Image (tube, rainbow, N blue to C red; front, side):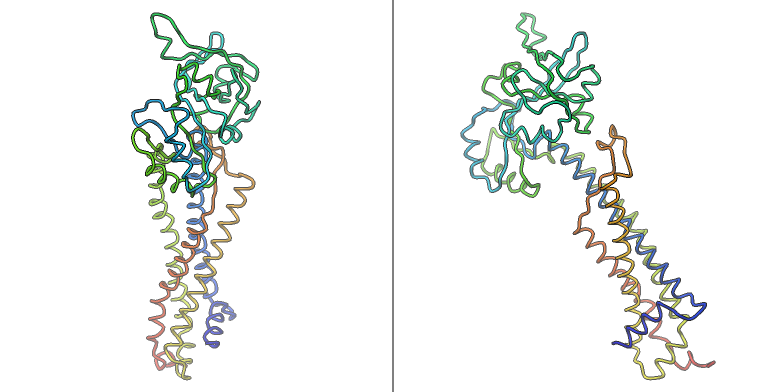
Length: 401
């Protein structure tokens, strides 16, 4: 076995002058490495994009929402819901909320907004990560609005605005419900739809404006880990029946996440073809080595080396190329991913992509699978050249020696 290793490494090094085998092996390693790097980077970008979108959406919608099946209001303090939550298999935080359309007015400027009233418990999980100016505190008659909305209406910290309940505005008999608020904070999420339309107030203020008394639109639940969402979702579905409706943030935006998953297949096919070029290069390089080493193979066979050992030599060469190519691809992918994560070199228009740079998140399981497939493919690609090498006749190889 030691002799097999020595011959395999010697072939790839090709110390003799004018040999093309080393150049061919380097091309095969580079081709496979670039294909592996392209696959790892592409899946890392997709993973990063999905993770970033999930985090941003979950900030507004919660990981799980509990609402009325008929889109009606629920009790703010609900014994049935409390009992189900107490049996939860995972830790969580819960925030009761009211969500309803309203008219925001500042002088002659007005715009339609989605008003979200949040209870005191758990709302820091929503506000602390998105508020960029002012405070996250929602005191009575204070309001937090999106930066884009503030720019559109010319608002700033300390300005006073009025919120009107849209349903009450159209009443002929009067009775319009409204309240004046003081802008105490501005938030920026990167999701244009939310930054231009969402405002946050205290739950009691929202209950007054929308005449909801002790009722709420629903309850938002946040888990410490995304892996905890599924068991909590299943637990609540089994514990809560009508009129409760349990909805995860993925279910609420199912079309978006289905589109993200759909993109993985064409990406796999396109960049898989790049890796296939690397596999073809391995076949070519090993075939060149065999063509160049015909007389050497004939000599080894005539000296008693079995055809089984000849096969092992070229299988080992294919494995070496596969390992080196896969490791090279891994190094390139991790290097570029680290640079992007640290310095955010490649930027994006935030209005279109919901983020200002290309997000990268390396999924180590996917990376391990890609590298393993690359190594296995390199060995499979070696089979045909190995078969050709085993068919070499020593007498024919050495006829003109």
